[in-house]
Image 1 (cartoon, rainbow, N blue to C red):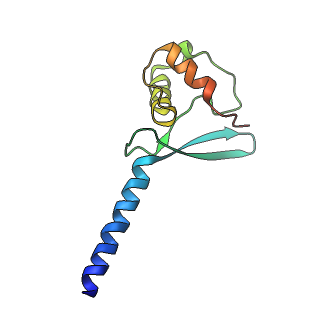
Image 2: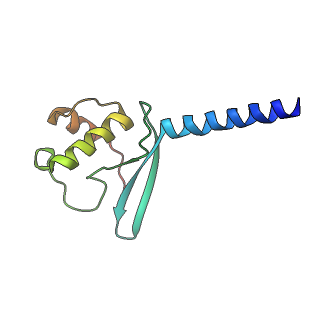
Length: 104
């Protein structure tokens, strides 16, 4: 009987950890004084936990049309999982960019 309770507790614990991984993400912002990590709840489940926001720094604000292809794709993923904005169009990504909280 005791072994069954331990087994069920272990299974429950594993389920909680997997659920936390599927629905929790983070993004790093780079400021003068160092790196700040911001956690968020994902809108869709995914195993990816770290996301990239090219606007999460004190650098120049680059228009979305001028982002490199890799940065634009990473930003689209971030927008999808953090804000639920699906799509890679400039209008969708601009909408997402306006919804990003101030990191500074």
